[in-house]
Length: 302
Image (cartoon, rainbow, N blue to C red):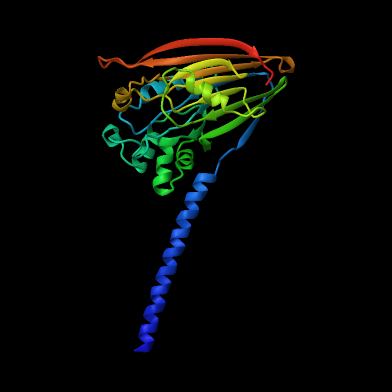
C-alpha cells in the first residue's frame, strides 16, 4: 500500500515537472520572438551613387478592406520602373483583437487563415524586405507566434528584417546612405506631418538616418528635410475601414518609388519620391491608378 502511494506521488511530481518544463519552453519562445531580429543593421555595397527602391506598408492581409488588386498593380508598375527591391514598413497581416469589433471587418479569422491568404495572394518578382507592426505582433502577444519568420518561410523572395524597426546602409562611391524603416504606435494626428516631425525630433544626434520610412498611419507624405532627415510616410494597401471612418481618418492607398542620388563627398543628396496612388471606385469598377511625384535636393551632411 505504501509502495503504491509512493508511486502515485512520484507520478504527480513528474507530471508537475513536465508542465513546468512546457511552460518554460513557451516562455523562452515568447522571449525569443520579442528579441530576435531587433536593431539589426544591414549593409548593402553599391557600385553607383544612385539608389532606387520601392516602399510599401500596412497591407493588412486578412482584412475585408485589404486591396490586393492595387498591391499587385503597384508591383507590376515597380517592375516597369526597374525596381529590384521593395521595403515594407509593417502590418503585413490584419492581426487579432486589435480593437473592439475588428472581428466583423475580417475576411480571414486567425493566424493560419491569414498566413494562407498572404501566401496565396502576395505579389512576387521583386525582393521584398519587411518589418512587422502592431497588427502582426498581436499574434506574438497572444501565443508567442513569430509572424515575420512564418511569412518569410512561406513566400519566396520575402525577407523578415525585424520587429518594429530596421536599418539599411548603402555603401556608395560618394559615401554612405542610411535608410530606416519604422512602424511606430499611436493614432493619426490632426496635421499630416505632425507625427513624422515628432518622431524625427525624438532621434538622438549622431543616430539619425538620411531617409526614414514610416508605416502605421496609413498616410502618404514626403517631408524632404526636417532636422536633415527625409521623412516618408509609406501609405497603405488597406482601404478605409469602418473603424477608420468612425475616427475620421482617411487611407492613402498606394506605394512609393524612391530614387536617391548622393553627390561627391556627400555634399548634397537628391531624393525623388513618386507616390503611386490608387482610388477605389464606388460603382465597383477596378481601382484607378494615379501617379503623384515629389522631388527635392537637400543638404547631405548629417
